[in-house]
Length: 511
Image (cartoon, rainbow, N blue to C red; front, side, top):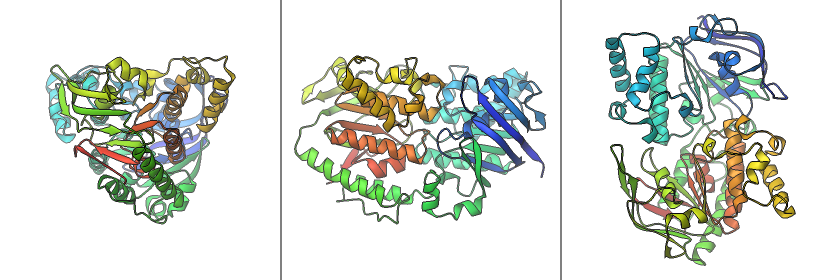
């Protein structure tokens, strides 16, 4: 079996960076294999994926050394357009790779660039739309799709030219459980067709049975390399020690079901859940605190007969169950992609007006501007809310930088989020997971009573996912109302006290 990609002593340091992102990497990726790159956030897996698909060194500037051959092409010596028909890529944030506003035009774009005839383009669009089950989306605006739908469109577009190799960076970061299952089936089909697949991923459970090898990166180097059978035989404690996510999500799903069905507590023993007694202990502590908070307070935020949505051709309307959100709760807002979760939280923070019904703040009808003043939203795409020239300035934005108490709190938040060493870096120069933590840091600094986070653990490794969970718990203990939009079953099971599932139109709370 020939190598579809081969790295010989490859290293790369980004322009203006102090340390190399990838160091002396040697790896052979045979044709037809599915390779998983994993490891802690910032370990080098995304950078290596960019080396494989040729974006490094030709698009991302910096110091490159070594030799990289992909699909028989020397990526440093040959122009990147030679790789275009051979390598498909899906980035961590699919929005960064769209060139058109309409789905059908986006699918056509790579084929048009290659000079295919209109008949051939239409044939491929029909074939790809059927394979990825996106026919109903073809005439829609990409800007009106959910995060999961956008990810599906990005994957479909990446296969329009029938590439030999497909590179995916965190392809499931914004997908619900059902969409991940569909993604798994699509990847399995592509692999069965002979395509070589390289996946940089934190969420590992869905890859069982698909991946042939697991490459564990650490500090820019390949720390471990496992065949699939060997990797899946590792103990949960060994997986946790490497900072990796769970390989079995069933215990977490049982816990979420328990939350939804309003039983007294999540009956999972320490041995049932990866991460041991710490997660279970956290659940019980949070349960006790939330129970006390709910019984001793009135709701901070309530909805009555609320309908949300947008008008227009791509518009929609959703009826929302009457909700009561209490101080001291961590509420997990779940449901399939496109069910209205993001629209709901935008409505609750005054960014979108409800189509009908009422939002109550401290028991009184609230106008959008009242909700905006009361709440802080960490968006799903944090690039929209990073404005300053350094991480420290971002956390201090709108605050009195001359107040010693505020600057001390900022330093503590930087330390709590492992951001101290990036304090003087520009936020846009950070990795996706690091940007996510900066936005969460801004939420911690804002001092508002309602904190809403839209997919806060998207792109985060196990350690930083648990770190975010601990910070959510601290906010709840301070009397904040915390609402978390998430598909992350590990986060929801380990840290949420209430689950609201918009698909089921009811919420179940621990008693």
